[in-house]
Amino acid sequence: MVKQLSIKQNMLWNTSGSLAYLVCQWLITVLVVRLSDGYDAAGVLALGMAVSNIFSPIGYFKVRAFQVSDLNEEYSAGQYLAFRLLSTTVALVCMTVYAAASCANDSIPAVVAYCVYSCVPIIADVYHGAAQQKNRLDVAGKDLTARGILSLAAFYVGMAVTHSLLVSLVAMTLVTGAVVLFYLPRSLKHIIGPYSLDFKRAKMMALFTACLPAAVALVFAGSIPAIPRQVLGAMFGASALGAYASVASPVVVVQMGAQYIYSPLLSSFAQCYLAKDTSGFLRLFAKVFVAIIVLAAVSLIGFAWLGEWVLGLIYGDSIRAFSYLLLPLVCCTICTAFLWFLGDLLVVVRDMKGNLACFSAAFVVCAACSYPMLAVFGL
Image 1 (cartoon, rainbow, N blue to C red):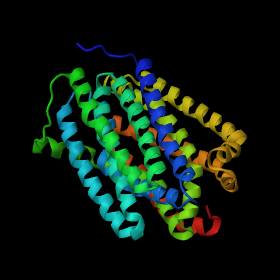
Image 2 (image 1 turned 45 degrees about the vertical axis):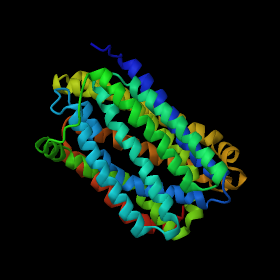
Image 3 (image 1 turned 180 degrees about the vertical axis):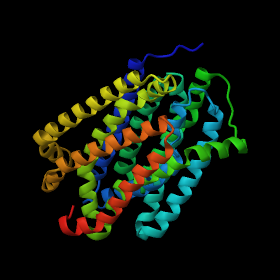
Image 4 (image 1 turned 90 degrees about the horizontal axis):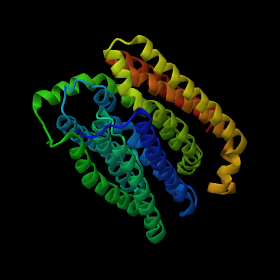
């Protein structure tokens, strides 16, 4: 049998790989400002991210939390992989149609290119879930590190040589796709043994039905930050959106940090739930809750103390005028982190309808308030 890792080892691999990937993705948002004139390219990149965030939940279909808590292996790894390929195809089609219908003509190629790039981690995620089922998140850590470094290198070379956002995004897609195509399948085969894609109709429909409420909730969750950004871009232009996105990008580390805390523990939550171990479940919940609170406090102090200086160091003095956005963004991000954590727990205990109700309510409030709040308060 393949050796399994401890919870601490899994958390270390997942956190280190995820942080490496996140830092590299953030540095891309820095490079797009540094290697281009003005904030227009940054605005187009932010627009691509916004469009991708709206429809990438269709690709993910909230399968990861369901998959890692499927301790009885109701569905095989091949079935999860087959379902993810189908859902990713649908997501990409939706992204492309939406971009063509809602974006300016000159930005559509780069936006679509980013959407294609965003499908690579969607496919990688289901491999990570299969590895997590076997307590082998070292596979995910190595994959995330490799894709992060390669995507950053490809983007830098593309922008430095061609000064084209489109070319850079295509290069990123090719190098990261190669990692997912060649490394992850071989690693998963080593962990679980031989497997094959299984598109059995009955299983695909059953998995679709089981995850549909949570998948719809995930679409709402992805739209909560994306809709206001699109409204902002429409009201104030690509340059203002680029400045906003540049300030917001380092704050994303707070939400991702929260996910790194609880994501490796979802299988442990599932074990407690299936064993009806209420005290163990609540102990895990308390530890995660306290850890996110500590992360929030450290983040607020750090951004209040060093935020403006760091923004100026990274992007130049022109960004300092937007540093007032930092602390409100941190507060919003912490709220979002708790929302995602509680939503994933609802999936673990299979309360899909409760998960849908929470995220849909949040989306309705956000969509209704975006235009009037931007009209009154600006960025």
